Length: 119
Image (spheres, rainbow, N blue to C red):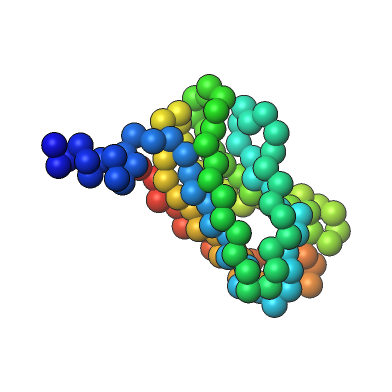
């Protein structure tokens, strides 16, 4: 009985991903988008002010097989840049990813660290 309650409390078996984006730069960051295969529409992230945080939960509703989650944006030369948020997941997976935006370079590329924890 206790194990079942703990499983419910910690969300074991629930699909979805909690994404946290922390803007540790000295400027507002806009134009970020998250996508994965079979998504109906890419997820546009609102502007995150300098020092701000944005949190969202992504719960894939579509049926899919092997997949990965990608964050993309355009630099100042309008070239699309990509970073892997979650390298591999399948239907039924859940977890979290923390994206630390550390620095915006003069060319508009963003230095970032991404930490993922899947269950």
